[in-house]
Length: 265
Image 1 (cartoon, rainbow, N blue to C red):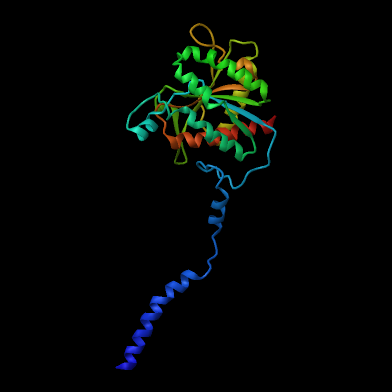
Image 2: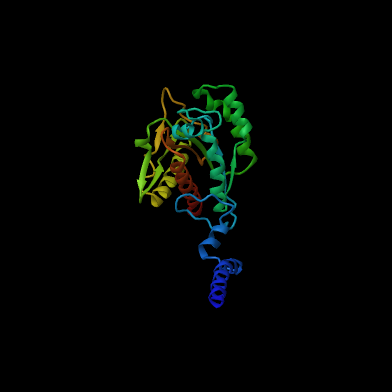
C-alpha cells in the first residue's frame, strides 16, 4: 500500500512540475514573429508588408487638405454614433499621417501642410468655393521653401459607396478619382502626372481608379491651385460611404503608385 502511495505521489509531482520546467526552457521564435517585429515603425495595410525602411531618396511629396472637415459616414458613426459628412476631428485630415508613414516605407519624404493652417481655415467657416483662394498663399510659401516633386490635395467625394468602392480578391478598396483644372496654361503637365499615377494604381489593383475628371468653364474653380506646381493633383479619395479599412488599403496603393512614378521619371 505504501509503495503504491509513493508511486502515485511521484506521478502527481511529475505532472505538476513538468509544465513549469517546459515553460522555463528557451523557445525558438518562428520566422513570422521575427517579421512582425520588423514592422513596428510602419502601418501595414492589405497585402503591403513593409519589413524594413528602404533606402532614402531625394523625392519629396506635399500633402494638404483644402476642405479639411470632409468626413466619411461610417467613421463618424463609429466614433460618436452620428452619421455626418463633415466633422471637426474625424475627418479627411486623418489621412495625412497615414500617407506619411506609407511614403516613409518607400524612402520618400512626405510633408503635411501644418495642421494649424487647416484648423484656422476651418474656424473661419470659409465657403467651399473660396477655400482654394484662402489656402493659396500658404501653399505658395510652402512650395517655395522646399523642392517638391508632387503635391497632393486630398478630398472626399460626395457620391455614395456603390460608386466609390471596388472588391478585388476578397478585399474592398475605396476608389480614387483625380481632378485636374484646365483653366491655366500648363494644366497638361498636371494631367500627365494624374495619368501616370492612375496607370501605376491600376497595375496594382485593377479598377481602383475612376476616370480622370478635367474641369473648366463657368461654375467651377478651374485651377484648384494646380498652376502653382506641374506635379499638383487633386485626389478624390473614396466617397461618403467608405469605411476606414477600405480607405487604408487605397492609401497604401496610392503611396506606392506615386513612388513608382518617380522611378519611371
